[in-house]
Length: 212
Image 1 (tube, rainbow, N blue to C red):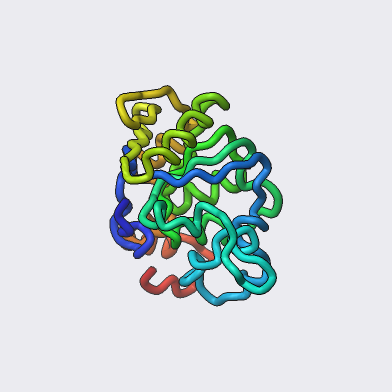
Image 2: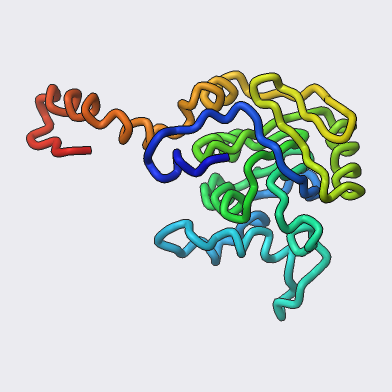
């Protein structure tokens, strides 16, 4: 997916995402596991990707552990495949920011915490759901075929891999925002600066709206 929307210019439409996969197994993986709190003391989100799943990837001496994010087979992966209630716990937006900066462009899972899914939408990352068996089959396929691509069709609500195409689901509001390019409100405001300025000038309580 293009980074245009994150740079404050045109917001790209996210109709589909294609890339190799990375499976992270386990239900109830919360945001503290995705990005431990001690790495959140930053001014910007830059560099957070290296700390994704840090406490699951390293022991107390920072010796690497057996974790997909340490596996060279998945180094270039962009489609994360997870299980139920992924992103639960704290509402920290640093969690999807860390995943995005690691290289994740789409997430397929059994279910997602609502706030986490909303924070992903703000980055243009679709959170696509499928039933338990479908997710388990996809995770197993990724482990056996780490170099082969998955296509997440946001508009058509399908996931394709190998010779299979399976049904998936995308929240209606999320699908509409991604497909129509309305997911990054900040970028939309910047790309419509004159309209924003006109509105600000019409408000009686704004003395000097300036240029947005």
